[in-house]
Image (cartoon, rainbow, N blue to C red; front, side):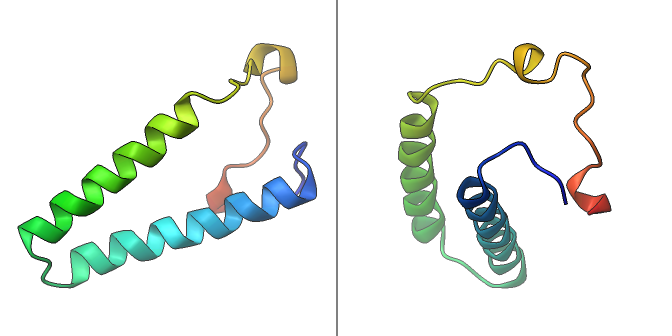
Length: 75
């Protein structure tokens, strides 16, 4: 895998992707009460709002060729 990200950021994104996938499997594969799902939705919305306030990437400047390499499924 080749990435223009710093190694610690790339590794953190991989860990987050695994956790996100695990969460999705847990929600789909188990009975979860509506109040638990609602509480999780609130927590995730708060986290997403915090991330959105951070610095944004300008992809056209980072990769003017538009080549982003293989998709994660191809790694």
